[in-house]
Amino acid sequence: MIDSHFINNAICVVSSHNMSSEKQFRYPTEYGAPRPNGATFTATGAGACLLTDEVSDIRVECATLGKIIDYEQNDPNDMGRCMAPSVIDTLVRHLDDTGRNVDYYDLILTGDLGKYGVEIVKDYMKSNHNVELNNYNDCGVMLYDLDIQKEVKAGGSGPACSALVVYSYIYSLLKSKKIKRVLVMATGALFSPILLYQKENINSICHAISLEVV
Image 1 (cartoon, one colour):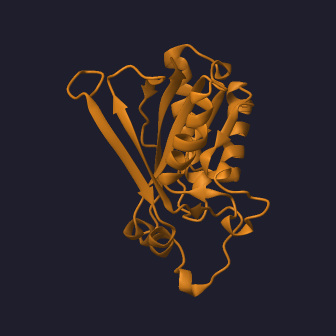
Image 2 (spheres, one colour):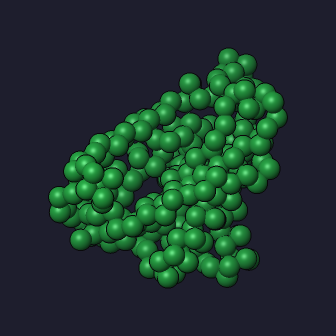
């Protein structure tokens, strides 16, 4: 909308909360059930950014809109496996559309796949596209110290993960020009408590934006 001059400024806000998510989509917290190693821990946090048509140090250089992907996954305790296919689809289309390779970016970030979802993406891209993702990380993995904070299992999840990492740590790296190009791939799972009760598949989607230092 900014690029088309319909608006000049927009504030984008996102948040997530551990207890509101855990009690809806997984075992009730009070139940005290052990969580599998592939489970992620919904991050409690919020972030906001200002998008404007005024010239700034960092710009949104381009974007690739995601598609809804159904890979016949239905385990709410393994969101990395549910969302990895949408990351792969968007990344492949982004590289094809722009004519770039992964080395164009100093860093490629996904939102909240967790450490096992990251491995799925890396393995698939290497075996099916001969692409080594050496500059790839996940905001859900970066948000916690997985060696110390064992309770988070595979890492963080929730829509706030991307904002908490990108708007703070990654933004500071861009401002100081320690890195100059970042591909941020926000991941999402499309499901509700009713859908899970009905044993339906958990679809996923991933949108990518390219941030560059001007």
